[in-house]
Length: 141
Image (cartoon, rainbow, N blue to C red; front, top):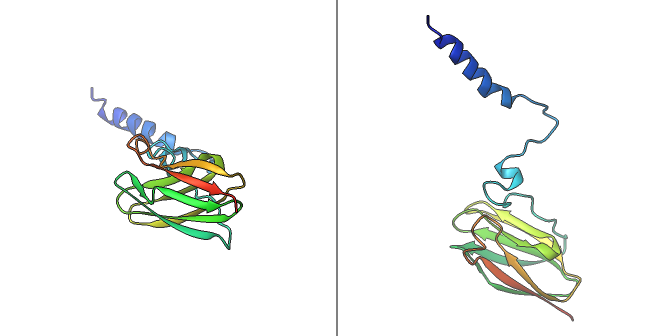
């Protein structure tokens, strides 16, 4: 007695059922929950229309420049370019984030209302541990 057709049908049903679901609810996946890239693909933070642009290049697990200075209350747009793989630039305290695919450029904005020194880093899994971070200084006047 051959059971092959039954097994093939059962396997096909098991593989197809997870694809069915409510299309109104977003499905978590590597690009949404940061699983594959460690958060690199969440949307870039909004940029104010008159923001000062600061160009940053991400490559080989480093940022260029590694140090950025901005004025207190100044609207800033970080224009990030990746020369090699997926990267991002995140500043937790300022809720700033910009992510880019290999060979692409995008911008993310912020305004720092408190003077001080902040760390920016790449949140892609393993990149910060490899040394991919820098310093943002917010200066009065």
